[in-house]
Length: 519
Image (cartoon, rainbow, N blue to C red; front, side):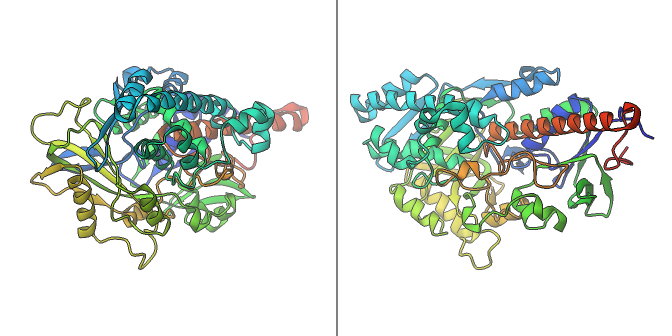
């Protein structure tokens, strides 16, 4: 009989940040880790495109909550600061409106208060300070009881934090209505309402709880030297250094199931990789719709089509800019926010969209000489898998982006190489089952945050990570989901081994039949 000390094998489907985080923790604990990824490299939605020989970030560009990654690397015996060089931003983002007004939010709360007072008056500055305190209180209330809890519930939250603390998180008010108390000026209400889109949601339907995102940014936004993809590559290097194996360019066709338990994966080329445990970093929709095998469909509840988060239209390239003075992060708002989200709720790309622009090569407001890399993004409905959904054609997408720039006096001098356009249908192809939704399920309504699956799926031996499961989307939240999946797996393994060692005659530890033959 094989001895229990043989290395347990874990197969992770997908090399997104959740899968990479779980892989690092498990490899550091001695598990045999194999990460299978359909793309040619790590990162998942933290992807890159190449324009004229230059790799450009084409996914998340905002890095917050660095302590999540410092702890992750430290538990693997590594120094995050050495692996991922950071620069803290003094200005979180620059914001502009069609009327020509501008506002910078600063890393220092008092500087933001003064800037807001200059824009909208002293009372607006005072109300912002009140808002910032409330956003911090919400964040502190949920940090342990929700974000880092394996499978929170409303009742569990009340038991742990108390009914008063839960009500202070404002789950029953919409973000837009709650912001009205702090920001009579519609520009400021629009600015802070935008934080709902960080979860792919509408501020008119999301709970006011999401105000906590404002505090997360206020707590620190960093720029990764070399781009966000450096983080994904650093995680890959750390995992490989601990013996983990990557299989890039390999698509998983199905999760194998034996005796009612996940037992490995079958690749598109017919190869089977046996495992003691499987972690899925795919979107829950891929599981629910059978894209990872019919037996895995029961592992998660289905996601209603109307529950999808937002998608996007993005443009990545290199250019020279003139006119509006860009910062590393710049947001150019639409003239009518309610109309913009009414269009999105109707499944239509807005005619006057808010545009986010990341000047990838800028250190703050300082632009490099010559061309610079950029990523532009406007929100779009997640209908990329619907025939005849009415999503705009390529020419229309370019026109919408150009018009959004022109409304703010920003001119783009295109370089010799065309930029890369990515639409909802492209995201749907990159991330199967999602329809192009980039954030899993939309956070609409008081209970939405509790409706995401937890780390343990309904299929024994299969664990879940990624932006479509608890605690939700965003780079640090997804990393936390990877931690939660790894910790749940480790606990279950220990529990199984205790059962086996006490259940066998003479107390001899024996390898489970469910995991036999997996090396």
